[in-house]
Amino acid sequence: MAKKTKKSTWGLSSLAWFVSRIFDPVIEIPLLLSASVLYALRNGMRYRYLVFLLLIDALAPAAFLVWGLVCKKFSDWDMTRREERWSIYVFTVIMHLFGVVYAFMLGKEELSEILFVFWLVALVFAITTMFWKISVHAGVNGAAVAFFNHFWGWQNYWWLLIVLLIVLWARVKIHKHSWGQVLIGGSAALVMVEFGLRLVGR
Image (cartoon, rainbow, N blue to C red):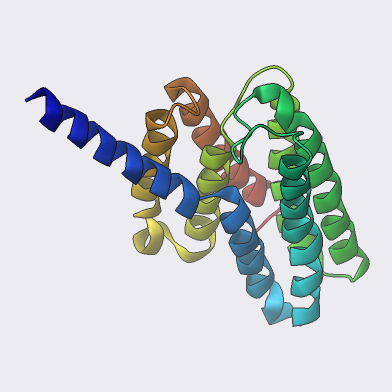
């Protein structure tokens, strides 16, 4: 019986690791940014801006993460120790600000406002990380839930809430976060994105 329980636990842990990698911010941030730009394409935004945005907002932070791992600045891919996270968060916030400013300079007000909302969320998470290990996995997925449901309706994307809950469970299951860290991370991002988009009139 004990062997069966141990095997079952191992299976759930493997599932949790799989979920954490599939719904990883490194993968989802480019997808979320792409969705933002594609939404704004109706106003004449060119695809080359999407390439620029993905370069500075997704590929640059990912390269920073790989550099940190190679140089032993980060202990693992998840940056399990809170103290390790501050540098990449600051770098990401700065990079994302370039995308916001560039969109504004191009006269793409709608896109710049959407990106600004995302930037504020990133800034809040970066500041919070100075004192507490809030979950970015939860934050990015919470932001995705709010974004897709805000623009395309809860009747179409309500199921993303289930995905969010599965991601929260996975992060706790593999001992990367506590329930408090994932619940606050997910709900804070969801609320900030939803109300932020409403405040900017989107």
